[in-house]
Length: 238
Image (tube, one colour):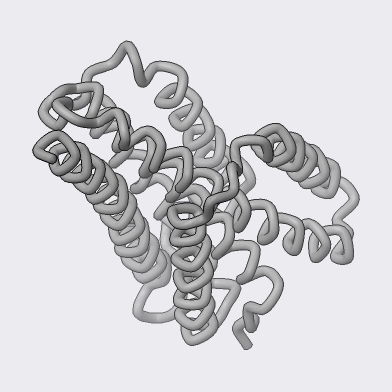
């Protein structure tokens, strides 16, 4: 009985840390995005140097995007080798960089539209995350299909940079919502399994790093759902 209680306690601690880190990243990205958007426009309505650097040319935004991808790749590939402190710093830096990137949505969509779709995304994410926890179905078998779908979306998105097709972009947004909705349930179930091995590891680096990488996966699921829904239903600024 004591062992069962300790296992459940370890599971709850692990999942609480995962969702805690994810929430922290979302809050940090949101604050950075909003603050950056405010600083990109002067009181007279003119774009500032920050806006010119990030969005006034292709290189600023491209640099941010490459930096984000490189950081996610490095963190995922090196998570077993680096310390928990290094993983934490990398995770926070990524949240800030993504906040800078997300600041662009405030110049494209209305604030009300962003807020509504954020809460819709949160509700959808919560439903699928709960489903991943309670379902008796083994979602592990879908992993290869999710990976194939992700690769397909990335390739199609890169091709559409040159095609600039609104129809293709709209279709990709729908596929992205479906893909990352499924990935939310898949990743949640995967984390639930991982939490079952957390007993006695609460104070170890392995436990801390596993919670950070789990939070990163769920954070990416949520952000992709939010951005895809925003592209589909977002109301553009006048």
